[in-house]
Length: 130
Image 1 (cartoon, helix red, strand yellow):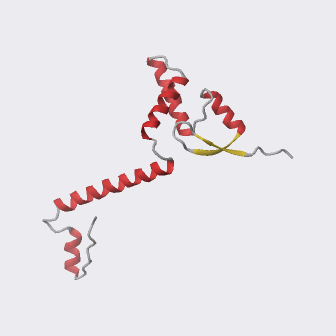
Image 2 (image 1 turned 135 degrees about the vertical axis):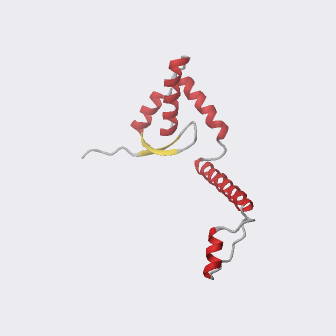
Image 3 (image 1 turned 90 degrees about the vertical axis):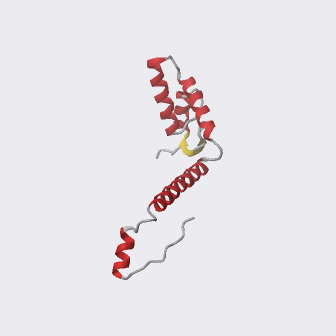
């Protein structure tokens, strides 16, 4: 029976995402990116940038890694979970603002739902939006 290589938790040097990988896989990724370990998303971004730049200005993988690390550094405050939570909060704020704008512009005329509700005799309590 063949022994299974234990998984190791490794952190992306660009975005900070942690993944469980085998030592062999980690070594392969590091060999591609100048000794740095990059998660799948960052490695694809670096490959794309290095490939794209070959058509215009010669940029090696090392330069593409440094450029991507700088890009990630501009948006990196906490870990990946914090960035996802921050993005969700932005999305909810944007949705709430759009909802407030649409309700304030249509507040002078009754909505179809209000017309149907009043015609049927069913009324709903409105919940104030924050």
